[in-house]
Length: 215
Image 1 (spheres, one colour):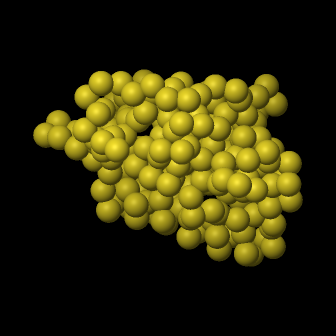
Image 2 (cartoon, one colour; image 1 turned 90 degrees about the vertical axis):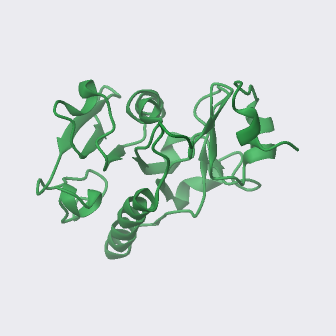
């Protein structure tokens, strides 16, 4: 089989089942409306995923795992997981996801594949922004809200997002999205020593700097 990186010069159209069969175990790719996206693109004008991005994701997971233990909550962070929202041909691959163990028996695919389809299973999602920042700030925000995911963090440690999303001048920003009663996300932009107020993890005692690693 040809490598996806050799074929991504032209858009690749896949059903979710085809994507799962070919790329389900490959953390480099996700599917949006049938189109394959490379999460680690390379090239002279592209800022690819980096050790720093992995460190940001690991930092979030470490603090959340600690709080899960402290709460005694029946939650866990899977090593890998795909989110299949609604009925479209999409498979998001979040950087950090917190699942409710008690809801997993209702998941139609979980017994055979690490795929979740129900917002009631997902307590929290975080995305670490890379070159495909538009998906994190727009498409994923919309779909995660439609699924009813209570909390969504966008960790933009490089300040890559558009000015509409993080302001001007662009700076490293943690966007904290919490679901309101209308099923939409209220957004809070945090930087530096500004404190994080989490809906799902209210006992967290963290600043944006502690997550992003920068002022």
